[in-house]
Amino acid sequence: MSIYKLNGVVQHYAWGGTQFIPRLLNITNDQQQPYAELWMGTHVKGPAKVEMNGKEILLDQLIKKAPTQKLGKKTAVDFNNRLPFLFKVLDVNSMLSIQSHPTKKAAEIGFAKESKTDIAVTAPNRTYRDDNHKPEVMVALTDFWLLHGFKPINGIQEVLAIPEFNSLSTHFATGKIFDLYKVIMEMPQSEVDILLAPLWKRLQPAFEKGQLEKASADYWAAQAFQEYTIDGHYDRGIFSIYLFNLVNIKKGDGIFQAAGIPHAYLEGVNMELMANSDNVFRGGLTQKHIDVPELLKHLVFDSVTPRILAGTKVSEVESVFKTPAPDFELSQITLDKKDIYRSTQTLSAATIIIMQGTAKVNFEEKKLSFKQGESFFVEAHTNYTITTSGRSVLFKAKVP
Image (tube, rainbow, N blue to C red):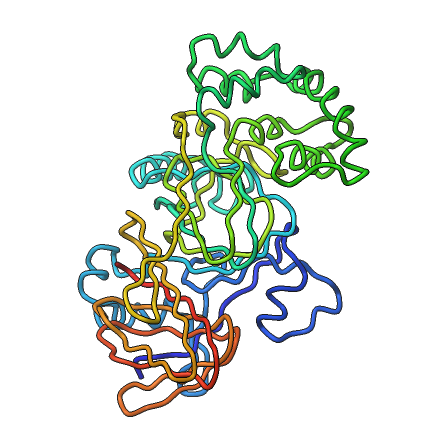
């Protein structure tokens, strides 16, 4: 076999929704458990399995038996015989932490340094969990809201003109975002509370009456006040909601998060493809470990203009969301009854998930059928076609 049915792993993080992924997988969720992410990869926190000869084996084990054959020669050499990407479906029901990710070099240095301490890789106070970078691309499956990069200088000046934030303007006299953000991240909690208390007092009545719009930072700040106020203390991540670009991505469009770009997913469902890593620097809106020195060392403090990605058509049925990442490439395949998808550029392995409809895969005089929510792994150098009995939408991950 060169194509294998893939069984992914669900992550039940508290911020996840309760409906989208269960419906996708056609399973009941009577307990209303959060289904946050569906992982289709080899990461140790959630390794997927393939079906082979009536049994399940870890995808990683399948690859280890013949990495050059399964991954392709160049991918095997470039990525040390490992699948270099992690493919996910995310259902964001409540906002994720303010975060960014390291470069490859920074991850290698940080992981080696922390590994010399007595902090376990799985410890909650660990910053570097592996030696890899974590660029990521997402495509919205529903209307999607996120924070992405620092605003332009004039936008930050407008934020500092807000009465509750005006006292911070002295720390932006240089016009350097780093100087301002360093003060915010290192500020004693008592000062955070003093600054944010009047903001919550102003926002709360309008929020409770449903008068705040999602296109306003006030809406998301009010959400954060409700979710992250603990024992009367406010989360300093609320400052970031105002300092970062608030972005609304429509279904079918995407965005790329490069190393060091601060961001936070706020609401919606997406397909996400990233380098195979779990390295995260957090800056607020979380109960998890926040490492301020590492965050400040590796953040990109330049103003960012969010660049929305529209898929680039490479055939009548496939659109690619191009990024500079060498680890992965995400594409969408849309088929009607009359259409045929023919594999091209099969020098690397690929993972495909059916998000809508069904798929019939023909390869090497064999046939496999898949339905909505199912996925499959394709080893390198495999020629195949995909057809459908009705309208189908698939997403494919591979190495570019």
